[in-house]
Every structure is written in C-alpha cells, then in structure tokens.
Length: 269
Ligand SMILES: C[S@@+](CC[C@H](N)C(=O)[O-])C[C@H]1O[C@@H](n2cnc3c(N)ncnc32)[C@H](O)[C@@H]1O
Image (tube, rainbow, N blue to C red):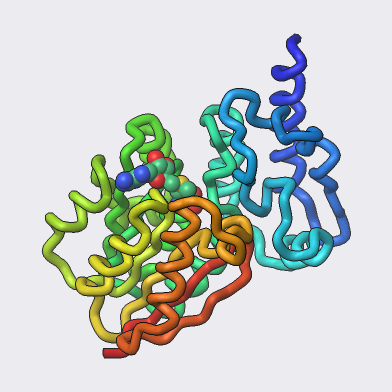
C-alpha cells in the first residue's frame, strides 16, 4: 500500500470515528490529517492557504477543543444522514465539501422554525444539507437543489429515495446562476454553498426572488479566516459579499462563527 493510500485509508477511518463520537469522547484528528505542508491529505490538489472545513477537518477557526465540545453537545443527525456521511467519505472525492453536523443541524433548526414552502439550495453535493433542510420543512414544502456534478446527484438521489423527506427535494443539474434565472418562484429559504466566485451574484439574484421575511443563509463566509487578510480574487469576493450584506438596508443578518462561518440573512423589505 502506497504512503498516500495508507493515509487515505486512515483518513476514511478517522472521518467515521470522528462522526460517531459521543459526549466525553474527544477524537483528535490533527495527528492524522496534518502533514508538515498539508500535502498528505491532498497530494495532487493541495494549494497553500486552502483548508479543509470543520467537523471532519484539521484546521480549526474556533479553538479546537471548544469546537469539539460544541460538536458533541449538538444533537446527532438521523442515522440515514450518518450513513450518508460514511458513504460520502468512502466513495466521493473531496468528502470535506459536506458541511457536517454543526451546519446541518443549524439548517434543520432554522428550517423547522421558519417552515419554508419554497426553498433553494445552491451546491448540493451528496445531499447532506439538502436532507437537513428538508427535515425541517412542512410536508408540502419543496426544496430545489442546483448541482453541476452528475455523480453527486446520482449519489444524493439514492438517499432521497430512502428518506421520508426525499419527496420534498427536486434536483436541477446545471450551473446555479443559469438555473435560478429560469426559476419563477418566490423563495422562503435559500442555502448558498457553491462556487464562491459567484457568491455576490447568488446573493443579489436570490434576494430579488425572496419574499419579505424570507431567509438566505450563506456558508463559508469566513473562508478559512482569509476574509480578514484577503489575498486572492475569491477572497475579495467573499469580503465584498459580507460587506454588502452588512450594509444592505433591505436585510437584517447575524454572522455566525459556526464552522467556516454561516451568514444568516433575513429580508425585511
Ligand atoms: C461545498 S459543496 C456543497 C455541500 C453541501 N451543501 C453540503 O453541505 O453537504 C459545493 C457543491 O457545489 C457544486 N457546484 C460548484 N459550482 C456550481 C455551480 N456553478 N452551480 C451549481 N453547483 C455547483 C459542486 O459540484 C459541489 O458539489
């Protein structure tokens, strides 16, 4: 077994162990994930400055033990979602794209409180966040998911077929900006989690489609902390998106330091 394969195998085991941990059980991931230059985890694709996300990742924006404490004291996702995490880790490249428990349970909580009838997700991947949102939606609610990866779509659909909430989810293949420009509906709830280059475009387009009182939730708004020291064009887009939201008189928002940052925006006029 090559050094990388061994690392990869350890990574899969560690993901599973980490997601199965219970209160009082502290699984330290850093030892497994961190090579001196990060290259052990992503030998072909590692870019300096790029970082895995929270829950299953080694780089922590919030103090690591505090983040662990919050994780293990947050309600567990249903068994089907735990299985989805395991299967994503086993079968999909870049499993760290999956948002994980802290974001997923936050979405479920907001959806359950808000009871959206029409919802949108930009960037579905294997369906973890989609099923989390759908779990909180009313029986006649509809969540439209935009995704460009056919393999992720096939994967997610196998879980939707098994979920009691799967019937609430429709998937549209294609670039999200094209998809949403074709949609003719008023949105109650949107989760934006793809293609950071278009974050500001997504926000503006979705805001125009959102009813007064509707929610728009943006993931990764801390962008691994790079928003406080932007260096690249994409860093600047995240900074500008956050600035525009904070200064937008049409909305109120709360910028949560959950995992890689979650901006919860409510349209007020
Ligand atoms: C971070 S992942 C989404 C994770 C998912 N929301 C979750 O929490 O489990 C981003 C996804 O967006 C998809 N994506 C990237 N660019 C896109 C685009 N322009 N339109 C739609 N989906 C896109 C990627 O294929 C990827 O699966």
